[in-house]
Length: 238
Image (cartoon, rainbow, N blue to C red; front, side, top):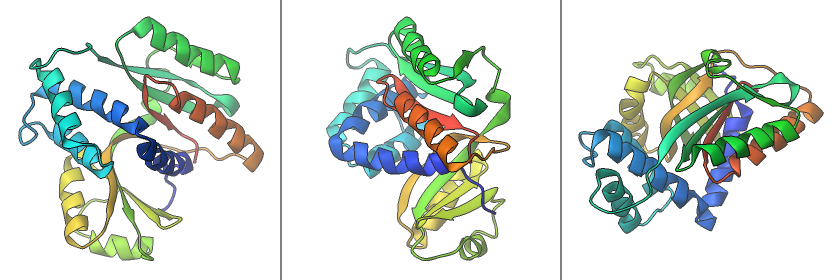
């Protein structure tokens, strides 16, 4: 059941490093504000907000920061008005790329994203050009603790697990979005350390590249990730 994106695992480790620098708090704060604006500030009634708050806590984001972000979303505190944008394109070696952004200035954001594409052998495309290659999935990452894919599949046999991949002791479990919370709870109750659990765009089919071409694409994806308005970058590269 292997085949999850290597980039997704690299990105996960990079996010852990960014969390130590505090950089990740800004991104999560924007996500919380957007979720609270769309679905209200009660995490018990707003699944998306609850998931992002869990993500914030896993990153050790202070509770005060979380509450301020919620209140900005509900209008209880003044703040910048953010909106979500999803950009699509092809990177080096024709890999398909989705760039999820949260911005207060669409013109600035699209110009920055386009610059990275253009300067690295890619091109920004129209809406719908590559999004059909992806689907929204629940993605849970845990510390595998020496367990194999078969070990984890046996623990989760009652669920319709789409994919399990173990790489460098990080297990990535892909599930139907509606089962994300339930599977996460089962794993946590079984004593597994949850590294992350959220909705992601997962490629329906992945493409592989040689090591030198792969590095070129990873460098491009990291440049996108480093843009201030970019929340997540997804690709169909294995």
